[in-house]
Image (tube, rainbow, N blue to C red; front, side):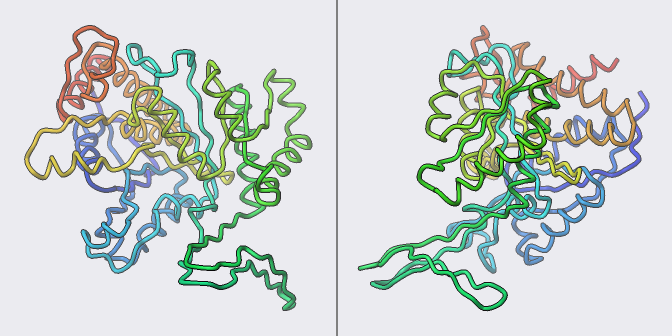
Length: 403
């Protein structure tokens, strides 16, 4: 078959460790044989981020603004151990955090459901989409180690020089302190993205914070959501037959565990980070969850919802066989290709993205899967494939569907 032509490039953000290895396999086996792939490439591997003083991350986000659609590989967010391992100039911030702040979008994460991989929570019948705020909180926090006794305050200095102060704590000994922030504009964008997405997919929207404890910070989120809903979305929700529901985060967790699923759960940045891993793992695997950052300005960035699979990467470097689940990374590519096809009016590209996802699901449902799924599937006599064999099996299924 003739390769599918693209008119506008995708922004391609390469990453780290085992997911970087899978990235190359996916392109070689599942994309390049079928698509005349056009990308603007950015290496977000930790070594090159360090070499460019993290400028490459900023450049990739700006490119996403230019072209509208990006696909991103998983990347390392360095800690103290990584500082030594990679001989870093400094402890660079999370690339995801930088990109999300620049694009000012909301991250929507949804489990990939396949037959034979039943959720750990037996009453979950439908996927639960996590809508994660993509700015601020702990990801943009400033921190300080307190060496000994003393007073720590929050200080706001207005442009006219006037000050407001709020006591954080009178320390009698050593400790730690952290300052978080968020922006009204970003919270409003988060709310509108969630309400619009709920209307697009015709699903109820839940939102949860801890406003009873955080009476100014979290309460601001609650108030902004309610004000925007009442003023801009209430009538549309009623017409669509869906609801907006607010509750405390701990109550939301209890309700989620007893629900059947089939709704969007909007969370602040940290809550969404944690709950998306919980939901994806409970549905089967951290490697079985889609993730897309949607900006109110119309930018889209697709990625896997998991990390770089460090343990498998070290095995790979040692020449040992790995069985790493690549489904979420494949779905990142298919999601980006589909959106590119929609925006550029290339139905062949949209169809290919659909076929690629269907091939992933069918391969697993036919009993061919990576070890993480083989250990939990209810299918009889599953075949556990290594990393490359699984991608090659998907290619064979894909070729059959395209022939």
